[in-house]
Image (cartoon, rainbow, N blue to C red; front, top):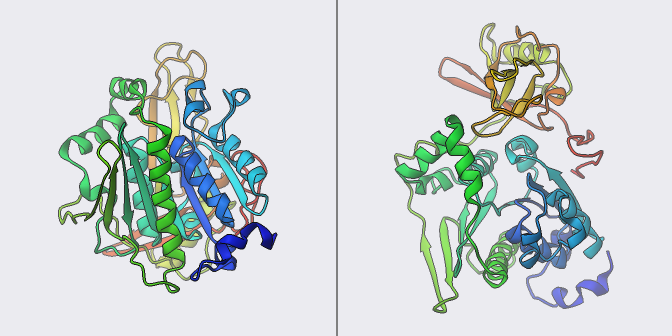
Length: 391
């Protein structure tokens, strides 16, 4: 790390350059807001940044996304952003994961971070990210944009505080249900697109998000409050700013509970599901309980249009429709979210089915719940390309 690069930052009385250089962040969403958040992080020399996004660069992104170029159109956003950000500041390790965050991220990877940035434009992804961050005990800073306004919400690791789902309305919950079950709704939601905004609103919002993260990792070196459990909202149309508490919804149906990892030897991410089930049952002292998974497994797809039967078993986080790989029409999927070790595919591993390293699985025995982390530390993170997460 070149000290001269950070001379002006080092002059700040509460600044700890070594701490920033060792900090780890996850940025979910590589669009306009994700670009600005990553830009601020690499300017600061933030040590490791994992960027996850399932979309590709479009021409319309170029007016709001500082790292994208014309030649990038059609490439995965996460891949492009990670490459350009690392070029921007080689001191920073920036890893791009192209895919749905519900598959590409694991609670264990989140637990290994200092802060999680939500830069998403869809409700299902934000709920999933909030639950993963909460269970892993990590700060989530969620950003939202409108044409004139930017909002950030900070959800801390205290289960007694608000979570992202606490603010969901009945309409929001219905949208989540429909997106999971209704093919036509999912298609309409995808076609609707996001809310139009400007790069100025985006940059202000990202600045607030990263500033709170800086305060968070330096919280013992200054006396400024971190806005945990609060929403910060800026109105650039009327030059107004609000800072208010996010209410806790005692009836929140999606409120997360903190997880305590089993202290026994963890099962391997590259072991077979059959062996993982046996090991977890042995640790929990049961012979019959099934493992609950954080994402569904697509065990089979029947296409009523062309007659294809696809039994390629894989982790699947998509909402609503599952297109047939042969004709493209909607197939009839068979999903499961649990494993008992007797499945036809139980000799395959979580790695082979597309689950990421450090995935958490749960096993219940009566009133007790066991959470196991599937060990994957320092294994190749091979879901996109052969890169290694440096922690």
